[in-house]
Image (tube, rainbow, N blue to C red):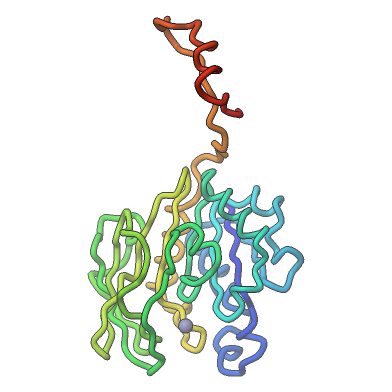
Length: 256
Ligand code: ZN
């Protein structure tokens, strides 16, 4: 499995609190965990790199892309967003983390605002495992807690998930659909909620396990663009093989 981890990588360089938690960046902590838990070949990409480190060559060699972003979603080039969307429709997996709910690729693939409620108050999050038999939840107990996290509350403006796997409860009273999947074309999109940059969330063993399992689950089985809608020859004899002249008189011929 070939994993690429995209991290905006700005908070870690600008804020001492975040730097102390993730001295080499959130991507480095995630890369260590995913490598250790899955044996995958992992590379990183960051916003300030050429093409954000996500050239066509990199995307073509990626089975699953992880995405963490927060303050600079708008700086992500639309050309790269197009590239990620095409790749997912063709089979690449995409695992969207925490504040990347507002990232351009996630919003594009959902087709909704992906908006939610939030609060930063050092409160407890309890994550409930709704589907213990699901591969992404392998090794995860019925629930686990993060002592301090940012709160995300419903309504989360996304299409109904194909699979809803975890539900979070917060000390302040809100709930949130915190782990979910969607099929898009041949690809799988996973959203996983925790991971605010001022808390050590990505050092938590359960969180690391879920991120690694999600990468393995969403990783591409095939890559097939399927961008055309070709007119196609019949497999068996059909009643009107000579209908071409009728069709050309009534409808514009579709481009292949
Ligand atoms: Zn956050």
